[in-house]
Image (tube, rainbow, N blue to C red; front, top):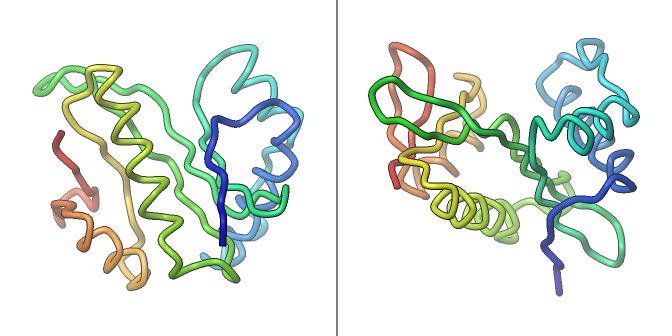
Length: 148
């Protein structure tokens, strides 16, 4: 299976939104998504509020990682990983790990000292994935930290 990884372009935002909705359904929050492809285009490409790396197979987006700069008073520059999503059909094939590795590379170029994100306490698949990549869990804050 040959997967192409690249930074998203405006035209990808419908596919990005489809995966966001898929995640919301998985998390039992399907009605919580109010974002639109147009808003993603505006926020990501006009306002430059976030970056998205897409995983593409046969010209279809099957995975995304959406992240943005964050600042820590203790560490300085950081990256906040908002979501890493791989469509259900393609999970377990190393796509999530590759997306995370690409975020790490970009975070290092940015000069970030850590990547931080949250994970639902019942999402065992995600928790196990994050443990495998070496994430540190801070149960008091329900955040994961991957020091760079």
